[in-house]
Length: 536
Image 1 (cartoon, rainbow, N blue to C red):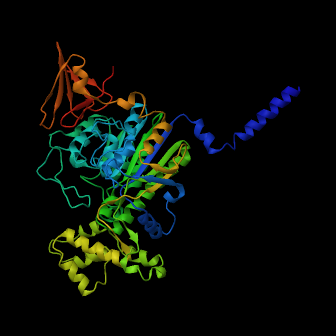
Image 2: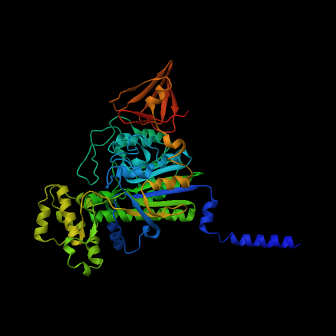
C-alpha cells in the first residue's frame, strides 16, 4: 500500500512538472529541426544605431544579440560578399569572388547542400537577384561571382524547395533588350542567359508553384515547392517598393511565405534569407536607403523569431557578412559641437525623405523639368541657390545621386569614409537551441548549424564530396575528354569499351549510353576541371 501511495504521489508530481518544463526541454522533445540564417549584406554598426533612432523603438535584432563575428577572408582583412558568403556557407575562408569554392579552387559542399542531402527541406530568399554573391554562395560553385548564368543554372538543378527573390533575367534565353545589373557600384554588365536555355520552363516542369508578383506569392499553395521571381534584377528598396512597386513583396513577406512552405516537411528545414540591399545603398553612401533596408531586414528577423518562438525547435542566426561605407554618426563638421547634438539632429533630415536616392532619381524626367520634385522626394527641399545649382550641373544621374547623398549626409551630420567595404567585426544575433555566442569566426556559423542539424561538413563523406571527374574516371579505366570546352554548354565525356558517360555542366544528372541518370549534386566546371559527385 505504501508503494502504491509513493507511485501515485510521483505520478502527480510528474504530471505537475509537465506543465512547467523549460523551453530547452521542449526543444529536445521534438524530432524536426529548423534553421533560419538571415544575412544583412554590407552593414556596419552605426547604421543599426541610426535605424533604431529612426524607428523610435528597439529593433527585433536587439532582443537576440549574442556576440560578434570576424569577417576577414583568406587573402584580405576586408572581405567581399563572395568570400564572406562562402565562408558562412562552407566553413572555409576563401578568396575574393570565389563562390562555394575552397581557396585552392575546388568546390566545397555548402551547409545548404549538406542539409538537403541529410533529408531537410531547403530554401533561399533574397532582395537581390538570387544569383548574387550571398545566395549564390549557398547554392552553387564558381570561381567568379559574376558568372550569373552558371550560378542560376546550378540553382535550378540543386533541387531547392523554395527560391524567392529577383533575377528573372538569368533564367530566360538571351534577348535583344539587355537589362543592366545595378548594385550601387560603378560597373554594369549585360544580363540574360547566353547558352540559350530557358530555365523558367525547367522550373515549371519540376513541379514548383511559380510566383511572379506579390499576389502570386500570397496565393494558396498547390505544390510543396515554390519559386518566386519578382524582378528581372533586384527587388526595390523597401521605402520605394511601397510607393513605386507595390506588386513586389517585402522581405518579411517572402520570409514568412518561405517558412510556411518549408515547414511542410517531416524532418525540418534550412532557410537562408538575405537582406541584400543595405550593401547597395551603402555603396552609394545613401543613408536613407541603408535605413530602408535595415528596417526591412529587421522585420524579416521578426517573422523568423515569431516562427521560432512558436515552433520551439528552430535555431535563428542573424549576422552581416561585412561592413560597408564606414558610416558614422558625426563627421568633420561636428568636431566642435558633438556634445550638443540630440538624436533628432541626425534623424529629422532623414525622415523628410519619402524615397531612397535611387527611387527618387528613377522619377526624373529626361528634360529634368521635375528636378525640384525629385529632390523633395529625397527630403532635399529648401535648397540654397548654390546647392540647387550643384544639382542642376550634375552631368549624369550618377553624378546627381552623388550630390544628393552628399548633401543629405551633411544635413544629417553623418560621415562616410568609403564607397567600398570595411573590415570591422560585426554583431552576431541568435535565438533557439544551440545558438552561437561570443566573438566567433564567420566560418564557425555553418559548423554550429550543421552540428545542430546532425551532420558534418568537415568529416565523413561530405568532406570530400566533389572529385575531379577526369582523374576519377581515368582511374577506372575510362578515356576522358571535355567537349565544347569553350562553348556555353561544355560536357565531360568518359568512354570505356561500349560505355559512354556524358556529364553536362551545371546539371544534376549524366547520360549513360543515352539513359538519363540522376545525381545527388550538380556537375561543376571551372574552365579547366570538371568536378562531379560519384557514389562508389
